Structures are given as structure tokens and as C-alpha cells.
Amino acid sequence: MANAFSKEERVAFEDILEGFNDALVLSRNVNVYNTDQTMMERTNNVIWRPQPYIAQSFGGSPMQLDMTGNFKDYTQLTVPATIGFNRSVPFIMTALELRDALQEGRLADAARQKLASDINVQIMNVASLQGTLVVRRPSVTGFDDVAACDTIMNEQGVQMFDRYLALSSTVYNTFAGTIANAQARSFAGTKSNVAFERAFVGDIANFATYKLDYANRIGAAAGAGDTISTTLAGGNNYVPQATDTAATGETENVDNRFQTVTVSDTTGVVAGDCFTIGTSATSADGVYAVHHITKQSTGNLKTFRVIQVVNATSLVISPPIISQISGQDAALQYQNVTIGTTGGAVPINYINVAASTINPFWQKDSLEILPGRFAVPTDAGVAVMRGTTDQGIELVMQKFYDINNMRIKFRLDTVFGVVNKQPEMSGILIY
Picture 1: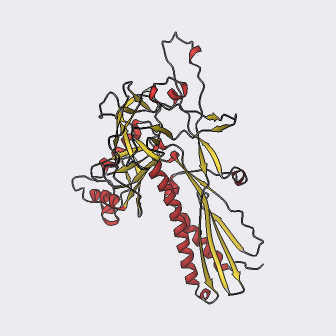
Picture 2: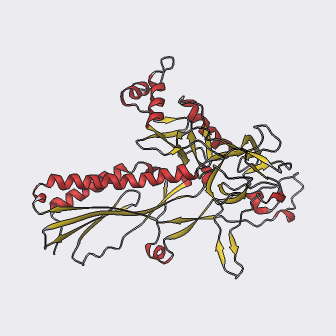
Picture 3: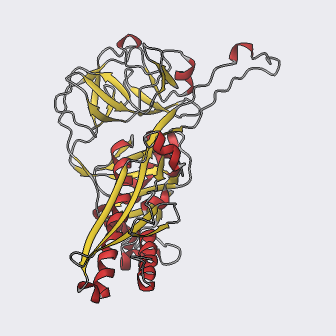
């Protein structure tokens, strides 16, 4: 067969795939959803993934068994997930350069590292830009910082398992320093020694921690004096809906992760800004987070993220403001805040008051990676090899020889998607 791979190249590809698999650190800690690739091509690589239902319960005395008025419709929420990232590393070697097989291996190893990095970066970007649980700390202290992330998740009903926190190198190493210097405490095993020798933190405050050699940053918020109406008449109370019907009669799914709200002014506001709503932490006009199951107020203001600045008075935010005010079944089912009725012009308080690295944290079910697949023909004069990682992510290696100039073209490719199904189960730690 023309352009067949030699045995040495097959072994090299197996080593590349193994290294690629090992390097996918963040993708190991998110869910994987495998799709029918034929169906994905026919739907423009978009599939709607369901969010979890939240049930309502009703009580009364043992003799009050009649639930006639409590049979409610349930609204199923879905989010669009797209296989939208296609990353490729091409390189060329001449017939003379191939005499040194070591160079080919080094180039392939560099390609593997870059593709694995691309996947990890996209997961970090989605978690950093769409996570809505915002924890701001005055300075890096260690345990208390992670405990604050644990607290905000617990208070809002996020599952207490499979939690992950990715820290910038500066923050992670400071955490390790607090463990290494903990002379007054006795750790089981060699935790202090490992922290001192390898700057390793490991599990802390119910989170598995990871060190990032790259981390996104968030700037200091430039918006000031902005207000928003939280009354029912203000039009900013959101009611979830499964589908929406256009004027022409077509029905389409609705992405309920985002809401367009009207505010007094968007000057200086940028995507990524974090904010709460309320005069103060104890104000009657505040928008307070609730436990998603019990609907009890946490006593803490709900945190929101700016997703897009639409115009001078409109913002796309996440999560939507779903309160008890409207009284509609879908709003009561998915209620995420409780607010007062005196909120005609409630102050917006920006949380990111200083530039900071973004340290994303998430519960595993909130983030999802969708592996894709290239249907590369194997009988078109190009040698093709493919392999799949433990998470189902495919790596394709191709080789083509050009007889005109005795050059050999190589390329390694992967295609995938990342979706944040539930932004209220992921967030960021900033300082």
C-alpha cells in the first residue's frame, strides 16, 4: 500500500496517543457525552442536552391527602452543545531530515502537547467565562479560600462530590506554602513534606485541586452607579420555558442559561464582569441566592456574570433572575433567588473590583466535553492512523509524500466541543 506507516511510526503514534491521553488533565474531570457523528453532521454539529429537573413537593396533615390542586406541569430545560473546536498541528519533513527519526518524534510530541493544551484551555475558558458562583477573597490564604467555594456550593444545593478547583501557579504554590509551613498542625502521612518538596496541594476542603501553568485573568470592573429594576413590572424576572414559538408558528428550543436584562447604564461594563444586586448584604431590596431544592434563602446575595453587553441599557447575564414573584409553575420549580417587592432601582454591585487571575471551580456534572470524529478516507493516497483516549477524544495522524520535492507532510488533528450545562454548578475564585 502506498504511503503505509512503518512499524517505527506505528510505535511512535502509540506513544503520542499515550502522551496525549496523559496530558488531558482537565478533561478527565468533566463529563463526556458521545454523539452519533452522522446525526451531528445533519444538525450542524449541535445537540440539545437536558438540564436536571427540580421537583416540587407539597405537604399537610396526614388527613390532607387530596393533591388535586397540586398536579403541575414540569418544564424541561435544555442547553445547546456544539462540536465546534477543530485543532490541527501540521508540519513538514524532507527525506533527508527523516534520516534522524528523533526529530520526527520531537515534532510529533510537540503536536501532541499543543492539542492536549488546546482541549484543556477550552475547558478552562468555558468554566472561567460562564461559571456564575463568584467567590472573592482579599488575599490568598489557602484553606479558607477553598472553604468559601465549598460553602457557596453547599448553600445552593450543588452535589457534595466530584468537585474540582483549578488554580493559577501563583495561587496554587501559595496554598502549598501554607501546608509546608504548618508547623502547628500534624498532617496524616507526608502531606507537609510533599507540599514542601513538590509544591503539591492535593485535596482540600472537599475539592480536588490542580495547578494551571496558564490562567485567564479578569480586569477591574469599570461600571459604576448602575441600577436594575427587580419588580415584576420591571420586566427582569425570568420565567424558564422549554420552547418558544415564533410568529410564523415554528417552535424552537430555548437556552435558559442566559437572560437579557435592562439596566440604567452599561458604560464601562464588559463581558466577564461579576456582580450582585442590592443596596447591602442585608438590604430588603437585595436579590438573594436560594437553595435550589428547598428554595430557602441563603442570606447571601446571588452572584451573576455579564455574558454580553448588548447596548447602552441591555446586558445578557447568567444565570437568569428566577424569583417567586411571578408565581408561575416554571419559575417556582427553577427558582434560584428570592427578592423583595420594593426594587424599582436597585444598585448593581460589581465584585471584580481589582484585576485578578481566574481560578475556576466546578462540579463534574456541570461541564461536558463532546468528542468529535473526522471521516478521513483511507484509500485516497494518504496514510491515516487514528486512536481514541480514555475519554473518547480522537486523535488522527496523517502522512502524505510529495514526489515532486521529496517532502513528507504530517498533521495531527482533533475535533471536540465543550459545554457548561449548568453555570450555577460552576464558578470562579478571584482576589
